[in-house]
Image (cartoon, rainbow, N blue to C red; front, side, top):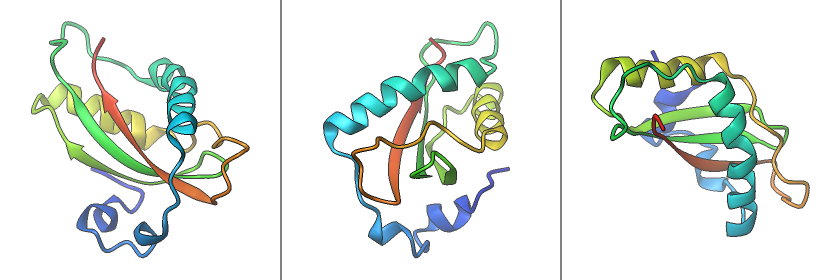
Length: 116
């Protein structure tokens, strides 16, 4: 089950979606480099799973790092692997705060989950 208003987000009827300021490319890359270890630490990656699997997720993150919404863009088709990503996102309320030099109150980011 996907939570945190993801059904509205995925259906494109979220009122927030149209007004989302984006991180600059440098801010985005730097932010993902900092967030990746946090996600890896909390993610229970299934054992003996193909390294070729991937799940793509888009999410709206508040300035303080709160995960406001998320939606699955693409799932791997492997139920165990897909569920591990769902569980991670369901259990996490926050990522790291957005960069200090980012002026917006929230932004949209995309994440790719691979079992490496």
